[in-house]
Image (cartoon, one colour):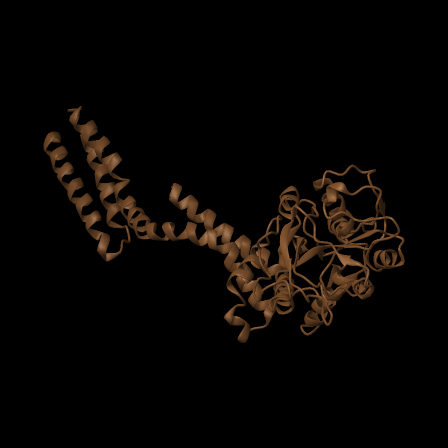
Amino acid sequence: MLRVSALILAVVMTVTALWWLSRDIVPPSTVRFAAGIEDGGYWRIATKYRDILAKDGIDLKLIATAGSVENARLMAAGEADAALLQGGIAASDGIETLGAVFTEPLLIFARPTAGVDVPHNPAQWSGLRIAAGGDGSGTRAAARAFLNAAGLSGDANTLLPLGGADAAQALTSGDADVALFVAPLSAPYLSPVLADAEATLLQLDHIVALSRRMPQSILVDVPSGAFALNPPLPPRERQLLGLVARIVAQPELHPAIVDRLVEAARKVHEPGDVITPEGQFPSMENTSLPQDAYARDLIADGPSPLNAFLPYWVVAQISRFAILLLPIVFLLLPLLRTLPGLYRWSIRNRVFRHYARIREIDEAASETDDPQELRALEYELAELDLEIASLHLPLTYRGYAYDARLHIDLLRKRIANRAA
């Protein structure tokens, strides 16, 4: 009975999963995507995603924000379906990652001003005006984490709420001594800083120790000429701190949309760039968030061969079925092996269940010499014999009925002799 109950439970689970998955086979046509500062580095990457998804009829509506911190807030409030999130920025419970997509170096530019020299050891920074990103930006969060790693108190320097183009303007105009950017090397707002001959990409001392004090960071090698070759910028290789940006999504995001976002990330980021080797992204490494199971399999295994024959949203649902039904299949396989035994047991039980009464009649007949009681027992045996004879059993199992009737016949003869 336990095995039968487990089999019934597995079937019910399968039917329920199929019903649940079939409710939303066709994906939504619009997806809200938190994309950071308009015309910033994240925004430009998000526009590439938008153009790729548009080919499948999906409108990726970009939401302009102050940066990763606001992106995370919109995701927590359910006001965005997906977003780009800077490494080290926490997401609310339930938010899943679709993969890490690119590395963002922590770019620290210094520009000497009158009487101010910026030490290469950040632990010695004091009295500096630091453009450290606007409120709600990932740069602001990274700047605070960096300064904490350097052991600096909050009032040792002045943190200006400037990021992106405003931070670049403050540095080149002399209104800031240091500007911090967490951005792709191609971010357009870096151009004025790179064009300023007095601005320098700072190579920090004790970079490895700083990295280990910032658990969410990695080390990034920026080769000479990464920004420009004539003249080479930077003129020498730099080893910088870096953070890994991720695509994050609501857990209920349609699997077909997950499929398209992962495929867009593959097309945009798989070729690599000047600081990233080809094929490194997208990846599930350095994500520090719960992973979407379908996205994880897409990244590990690549696009399904079925994409050549079926629409992407059909393939996504098939893959989704496979992911969710796999545990059920592993449960069903052992149970399926027991089916022949269960069938054989059910057929035999139709005969063998009468043996309990046959034994009771045998014991009763042994304990009495009353002819009337013996005839009653003999009559009951005759009824059992007719009942077993009327059973419709498969040919292979009819021997069980014949054996039972032989036992009944022998017992009837013995009772008849005692009655005589």
